[in-house]
Image 1: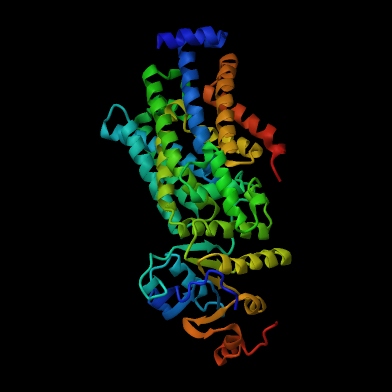
Image 2 (image 1 turned 60 degrees about the vertical axis):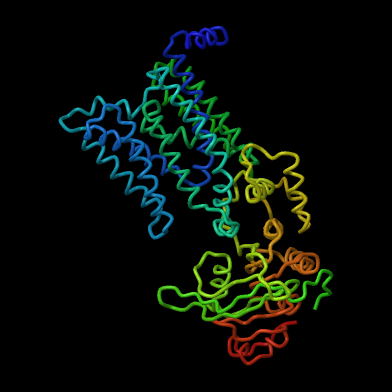
Length: 277
Length: 248
């Protein structure tokens, strides 16, 4: 790790990067933002903005479940609950009897109410407030390893899932006629989103997880003409928002995730007039 | 009847006693049908007669009783039926950043499209699009295609890999007159140049009369079948469509 820090000092001699925690935060964002840029492309294509919000809420319930079970690290209960909620929402949506926004809202509201009810018991919610805003400056080197693993797994999964998801988003019946198991790909995709949200919620925060997933991809969509261009732009814009947001947060002395989200929002509005017609 | 350059005689897709029941109600009852290679078979029928149900059963979207077989000219079983399908219409986001080549590659190969398309892959896509004279559309955004162009791309996709049975579901919707003409000419060409059977659902009897080799009139089961003139003159056709004259 020290070697990496020395290398960063030589390459990036900026005042805001002189502290180890800022270096860690930068490394975390260099792993997190491509992850969200990647998944965001399909989340935007499939109109899942609301879904990722619900995943953020499910994280709170996951933490609450961890507290009830008395585990020290709630990550396992968060991932289990997130994946379960994601699969249930998708299952109900695929049956098509209830509008998907209603389904997601029911899950989302239940999750946040349940989470708040348990975590606020005895007036002790303040110690969980970190999860709402997130704190990327608290990333430790061991967390970076987890994020790296997460990114590698996501890229690998994306290699298998992307084509079926793309085809199903254009025409489900065509996908089916070609023997593509679109429903299975969708389940795998939502489970993947759930895992990524749970792993990163501590650094990004419940309230801003959606911004990170949707904004870079939405901005990229304003510019892209092809699938490959869309993905590269989304990852590129997410990285750009991550790095400049972190620097901005240092100088404005504000929450990093908020600054990152603001830069991403700025990128969206700048690119909006360039949309293809 | 068209001149069959690669005539395969009696090679055909056979539907035997095909029955589809949904919640106790029979949507299709004992449908027996031969769809011959090198022929364009038009499926007609009133609304709710079961045309879409039959297509969905053939595409494996609906469970059915009975058999669908690919039969060689000597009556022996050929491989399982491989279907190619051109959907009726597609409700997709027309602003999506997906080119025709992206769409084609996503449907025909495993390499993830987001990685970018290799030179070899682009050549393969262009080659496949040539079958429907749409190779110039490869770099266009899918959402920017006209109705006729989209239908031609979908037809090219349905032909990759080459199917035994090509299913066209009312391909005329949302297509202008010129696009329609090109589309039907392309389909007509296919029965001569490819080894496949074509099943076309249509409401346009004038086009059916001009292009189809055989017509099947459906209501739950087959009411009449044969060459277009015979079916249009049949009592069953008069019953179903009130005896209206068919435009030439």
